[in-house]
Length: 364
Image 1 (spheres, rainbow, N blue to C red):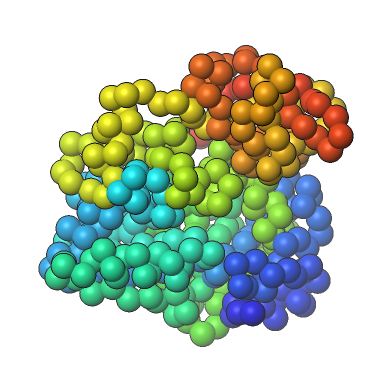
Image 2: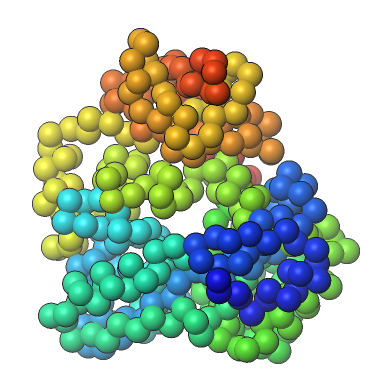
C-alpha cells in the first residue's frame, strides 16, 4: 500500500486511515460532518497527493491532448486550467481530469484520478503513439494539498508572494508556499473557493504545518476523504466509478458544456454527435429523498413498480441537511419534480428530481 509524504502528519493528527485506490489515506480526523461544515463555513485542508500527474511534452503535445479530450485545450494559455475528460471512441469516460497548460503548444500537465492513474497513463501512451509527444507518469514526484473554504485566501496569502487576489478561478501561478517551490491553482473539488498546491519537494509537510498553524485559529480543520465525498456531492462534482464510467457518455452525464464539437477531431466525437442527433435515452439527474432514509450507491431505483436504474452517488448532505444523490433516469423522467422510489434496505422510499447543484456558494 502506497503512502503519501504526509502520512506521518496524518498519524500525528489522529486521523483514521483506510486503504483507497492502493493508498493509505485519512478518511476522517474529528468526524465527517464537523469537517464538512468547516470547509463550508471556514476552511479545510486536504492531502490529495494520491492523485495522478501525467506530463505530455513535445511539438505535438497540444495535438495529442486535443485528440484525447472533448474540451478545447487550444484555448488555454500558460497559467490556465481546464476541466475535461479522457473519452473512448464510444464517447464514454476513461476518466475525468484537469488539463494544465504549462506552455503552448508543447507542455501540458494532466491531473487524473488516483484509481485510474496507471490505466490513464497506458491509454494516453497507446493513443499517442503516432504523435510527436513524450508522455511520462510524474505522479510519484508530486505531492498535492487542497486548501478549500471561504477563508482559504486569507489563510494562504501570508504564506506566499503570489498575489492570490488577482488569481481567477481555474488559473495557476508558480511561487513558494512556506518557502517551498510550488504550483498554486485556484481549483478544487468541494464547491468552495480555494487552492490546490502542487510541489515536488520531499518535505510537503512544511506547507501542511504552516497552513495548519495559520489556519487553525481561524477555524481551519484537516479534512479526510469522507467529507471530501459529501462536499463534492453537494456541489454535483463527478466521481469516476460512481457517476461516470466507460459505460456512460459525456452527454448522458450532463457534461455537454465540456464537449466542443467545433474544435476538430477527438476520440468519441462521431459517437457523441450521433447521440446528440438521435436524442438522449437517459441522463444523470440530482434527487432528494422525500421519505426517511439515505440512498446509498447501487440502491435500486423504481418507477411504476419496475426497476429502471440504481443510485450512483448518495449520502446525507451535512450542509444542505437533506438526503441527496445522483442517478441516471430515462430521459422522459428527468424533469424537475418527477417522483420515483428507491429501495432502501427492505423499504421503498419516495424521492424526487431536484435542480443541481444541491449547493452553490455565494460569489463575492
